Length: 325
Image 1: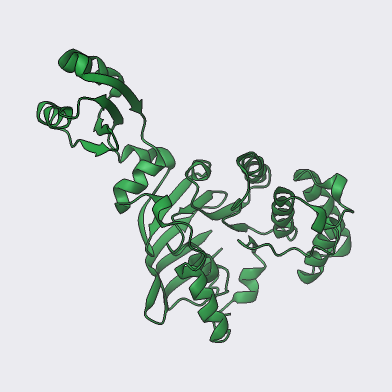
Image 2 (image 1 turned 90 degrees about the horizontal axis):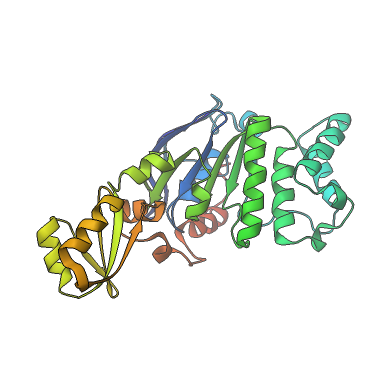
């Protein structure tokens, strides 16, 4: 459904996307996982005709966004990071307006609006003004609006950013239901590890480059085993490294290293070092561990700047004209 080959996007001397290639299968939930400034939003903008690539090629359902932008736009829906609903309209009116802009016939428009509002549990609020909605309700309505014209692909750019955990879980239940019942292909960006776990496949992206693409389970197998966290005698660092031939890292007052099977290893550890070990934890590999292994830093270490490269890119694009549309 989506094919990208050697995508590059530069803003002056800044290379926001650097040779990115990937494919998204029909009916798949696919995610870009990375921190702010990694190139996630810039890539979505190129896929959705908002920016033209500096170089490289894109196909959406076999179409080129640069030469066939109108045909491509009819095939996707999008939920941006920033809210884009009209708060002075009701939920139903927001969907009605979207349907008019996409030339959805009135009868079909009404049928789809009712179906989507029920799917996202907003039917009882259809006549309420959007400005009275909670953040989670607005997000659900934005997703429903993006689906009104029955797109083949739904793009979600940080769809649960700033929402509480309970609301994020509820939105993900709706997204999975959408994929399972309607068959929509979902391409999303996120920096939440738990959110990425919901996806069929993940592309880990950092500094504009894709580091790996695979299922969550396959990516975690890259770690090569379980993490052992030991608290106790500081001298254990050198002793365990020598005895077990493992790379022991000191994190705070704990010692971290990896073994093939934590459950089998711990009895051996206790037998070898006895009273020198005060505590032992076994931690199965996480996507956080994968990200650290592939990039050399944790994802949270690079979050938090509202002036990241992607937003700089948007500002440069807006200031320099709209030739990329």
